Image (cartoon, rainbow, N blue to C red; front, side, top):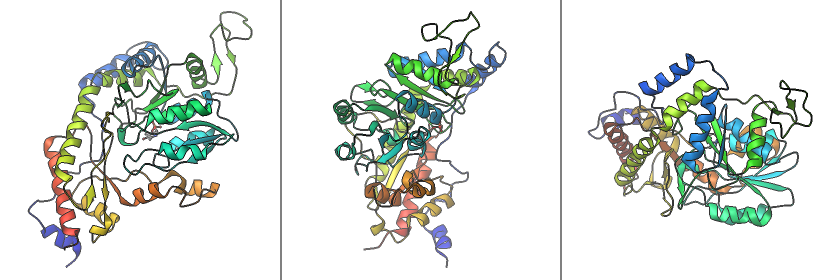
Length: 401
Ligand SMILES: *Cc1c(COP(=O)(O)O)cnc(C)c1O
């Protein structure tokens, strides 16, 4: 008999009826109405709603300023520009992230330098950063992977000592806390994404928070072609119609339509995060005693916002590969995923000359990780289905002692 057929007969739990994705937005009638209201108003693109959204995100994260963008990647690009990253500059980041965390450096002609992760937290290891700093290093881009904050005290200290800008990629971490401070209020600039799998959504969208006016002004201008109408910034003034394009920016504007959705979603952020935390705690309680997987380690003095939940498999205890486990869980209608192939192993980065083996811990984590479903719209039954499917699949593929 095929393994598949044997698995179907194994254990008492039947296959879940409908497919459970690993992540999904929660959009209600209030959200829909707020978008419809904007469609009936005078502004569709840059009206008053964007500013309101920016102020609300700044207030929520405890930052002075916020500038919203068409997506999180554009926001990261803008932050790299505002930080003064240019041709030949080196920027330190983690390989265990979405490609955008490093691509934004390439957009500016800079060079991403990958530093390996701490095997407990899966975040960039501050102890390994120092040896990678050179005269060309300009910035550090830590990523709060899965929603658990990177070690910001150590990272900020290294940055101050070496005159580096810290741009946090907090795409996973809206609502997370590092010690007593909200993510978004700590580094020089912090990026949040509003892609539908993230904590709140605007369809596409992103934002930078900052406490520094100099960055705030650059970000605003970069978002719209490098153009300003700010009288204090103009080099000349021909009249009320006059504006100047002072550097090469982009059209990275978000719309009022999207910002209205963002404002409506932000009202629900606490319940969204509570729900994610409850499911994560349930998973940990149910799965931590399993021999073949490790549940995520949590820093005691920080608060994760639980963007994704990753199990690390001990493949020496299993008779199947990660790919077979992944496929078996998909067959159970559980939408598992893998985050992430280390950025420098993508063909584009390999062609730039990055070698396999530069961050061995991230590479081995990639081989052993599996992301299980986690989003605010899941119910108890969904979470139980996930746990049952994992128990069923792992029991089937466990090495019998
Ligand atoms: C989602 C994400 C981004 C990019 O955000 P977009 O809004 O999709 O452009 C960047 N970094 C990480 C870690 C992400 O998860």
